[in-house]
Length: 317
Ligand code: UDP
Ligand code: MG
Image (tube, rainbow, N blue to C red):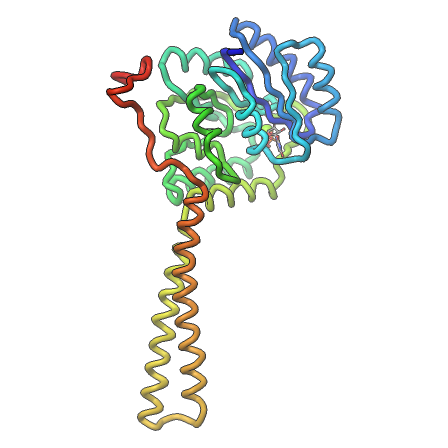
């Protein structure tokens, strides 16, 4: 079965907002005239979310529910949705109505008209977010753009529309701890952005405590940058130089006879081992880095097209 649009909605303990969300999303999607499915990914909710979803299933034929056995986190829930989605286009949207559902219709229109594969929703106005959230978010995008060398649009969260080709490419990545908002831009598909006003959460509380924000940041840094590992290499090298210097000094002091008994051997042993260890740690780090990259198994290039096998509509783009 082929569908035009899948809307993936990760939700964790969203009983307060769910009825409001459904009430607002459904007419928007019905109005597009598209053959669609709404993929509610229940991320192991422990409140009434699954019960409510079962109720909505009864009279909304386009609704589909995928429940995860345990809370896997926002990014993993979206990944589960992307893996299950059947649409030619797949939109991802938060359940709390911070991302206006109406924008999905706009994204679909832009995606088709401009022949792009990805339409990012960019938060033009974030005044509804707390100053803390805004400041940490700004820091996040800035650090990732410099450290991670990712050309991610600033202030694009996980509200976006992706073509089937994009979703297939994301699904093909085997890596763990995926940060989709950074991975999708690295896939290099033609893209555009739509600016929208980020509203306040319609009901309930944020499901993103500081601990989850920290995890996302750590995943982002370690997933996109070897800078911390490189730092270990440089520290190791610096330590090696210092320890070697100390070793030479200790031996010279011994030869010049300006030392007490036992000092030289102690320093030689300590400094010698420290130098070797630090250097080895640095070398190990480099190999761990390479293994890590290999394990992520990201393609190193993406062919836009090949003149021998032109894909429809791809030529001359
Ligand atoms: N979410 C999820 N699993 C989690 C945490 C959050 O599926 O472990 C969902 C949540 O239900 C919402 C979206 O991810 O649909 C964004 O979460 P939230 O709005 O709480 O984050 P915030 O907007 O405060 O950053
Ligand atoms: Mg939210």
